[in-house]
Length: 124
Image: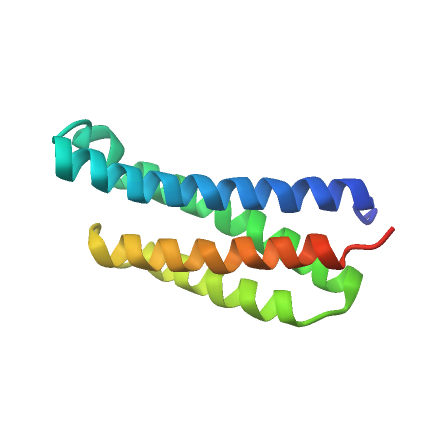
């Protein structure tokens, strides 16, 4: 199997950052819209949206953080990203609500930070 090019790794890390940001926006935005305005609860807080989005973010995060660690040989982003991925995976198994949102947000912050570190450590 061919190793991904540097440009592809950069794009994947950027995709991971974008997915992490979307997770946070979805969690916080959904809670605010439903809690304050009572709007869109049946769609915004649907567990399926969270499960699919979080599952996709976990896969992208695991692949790109792993590729980055193999490339730059630094374990910091790998440990931080792995911790974040564990928090995100845990969020898939707790009841839908505040605990789930807290685990998701904490996890995606760790993973997004690991993606940013990967980008900073990437050298051509």
